Amino acid sequence: MPTITVNGQSIEAQSGMSLLQACLEKGIFIPNLCYLKAMTEPPASCRLCFVEIEGQPDPVAACTITVADGLVVSTDTSAVRQLQRTALQLLLSVHDIDCKNCPANKQCALQDLAKFLKVPLKNKPTETYLREPAIDETHPHLTYYPNRCILCGKCIYVCQTRHGQSSLSFAKRGFDTVISFYGALEIDQQACDDCQQCAQVCPVGALVMKSG
Image (cartoon, rainbow, N blue to C red; front, side):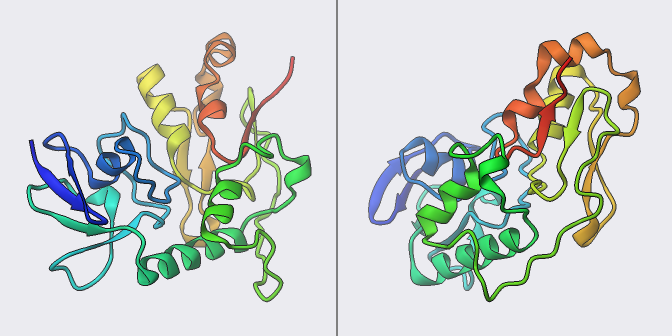
């Protein structure tokens, strides 16, 4: 079992485990938005879980590093925190910050990270760029809010895991990337109503089950 040193603390981790998972399971918090324990290939999309590793010239995403005996890791250096704050500010610049009307209010991963990293949710010097349309009703059982979505991919993963194929996928590129529902009409309504895992796993209220 590999032994690694994190912030001066020696911890043991299971072989094959990611550095992010090893730290989180030992109570060492590293900011993240796209981590799911069961996901074997992390998307590394949020770019928040930066750490410094002794011997490497630049910070790296902890979810992409497999633990190895002797790793020496720092999770809270000034350089790491600056990278995390910048990544969060970029996410907030394309996010519709309307917390009081969001179902994830007070249970939102962005709110939690903003508090942890001391980043204001509404930063006046930063312009906000929102997608159109603001609401997508094309899925028969879900309402999607693109300007809340952080593109973490959790919804796609849990739908694929539960049903063997996902009615959700990424579409377009860059700023225009959204969750697409191609093939969603083939999903049984009762199956969606009974499952609801995609809406439940969403950390920011971007997916909401339709009523009725």
